[in-house]
Length: 197
Figure 1: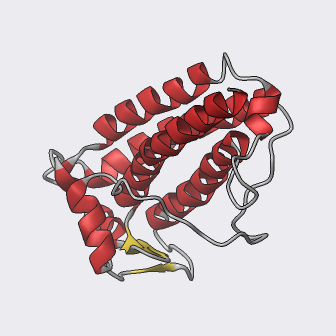
Figure 2 (figure 1 turned 120 degrees about the vertical axis):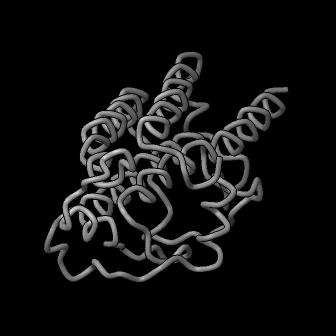
C-alpha cells in the first residue's frame, strides 16, 4: 500500500470512516458525548471536534500547496524521518498520543450532536471538492502533465511533526488521522460502558 494510494482511493476510505463516525453518533446521548473518563482526557465529543477542526487546518494546507504562488507558508521542504515512516506505513502507529492540555490544542466540548454530524459532513464535502484538483496534479496517468503541474506537485507546507507535505500527502494525512482516532473512540465507548456499570 504505502504512499502510492491515489486520490480516489483515499477519498473512498475517508468516506467509509466518516460514515462510521456519523452512524455511531446515532445511539449516543449528549451525556455520553460530554463525559470524560478522567480530567486530563478528552470526551468523545471533544475527539469529534478535534477531527473536524484539524481537518479544516489540513485542508487549508492542501489548498495552499495547490496555489501556483503558494504564499509564504509554501516551500519545497521534505518530510522528517517520522513523516517518511508514517507515509510508508500508510497509517498512524496504534500508540496513544498524549498532548498536555492547552487552549490551542484542547478542543472545546460540542454544543450538540447535530454540530458534530454537520462538521463531519462538511469535512467530507470539502475533501470531495479538493480531491479532483489534487488528482489533476498527481495523477501519474497524465504523462503530459504541464510544467506548472509538476511544479505544484513539489509544493509543500510544513507539519510540526512530519515536515513538508504536498497536497496529496495532506489529503492522505486527513484520512489516516480520522482512521487512527477510531481506536480512541473504541476506548472511550468501552470506558463509558464500564462507568455505567
